[in-house]
Length: 243
Image (cartoon, rainbow, N blue to C red):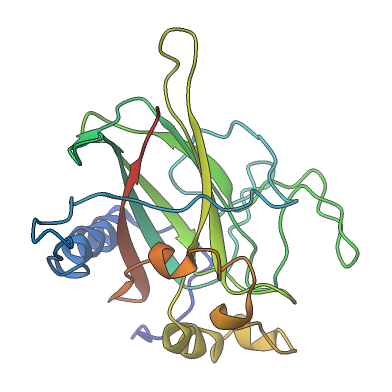
């Protein structure tokens, strides 16, 4: 019998993938209660989120894939709690109307359970040539992309996060680029990091409130994560202004 708390370091079956993304779809319906603007009018379903720094670990690998957990060269899958992330990208007009953006490129990149990024040389690690936990997808007609990754680990000085970048199609010779980061509730991170492989990472992680980058709008970039079987799922409605 499988342990429901098992951390997965393998490719998921089609049934498991369907279950993860099903949970992500359900999360988007329940995560954000209807809000009211100061005028009393409903806030748009997609809300313009703050841009944040790209950071030193972005590498434009041009890896078109939904499951970003493996290293393409070896096929080795990074161990950790599976996390299905759905991002819905919309353009917000001056009047507050949300229109899905089709054919936008959405990149995700993050550290593994031990706090390491791929294809970079750092003070404490050298992963040049590896390409785990990186990839991009192209939005469909509803502005949506789906990714399978793992719950990110942590490294000194930063709260738990996932980087993302959106590049819209070039219109009239000019596209738009939006870069920011997703964050996680501390209680959820506590529960995930108490288990392997995360628990093997010694040290003290930085909390959201002590991360200076999080302080620049991180509360608006929290992923609404729900549990799904042995993993987690989240859907984020991202509104951006391209003009």
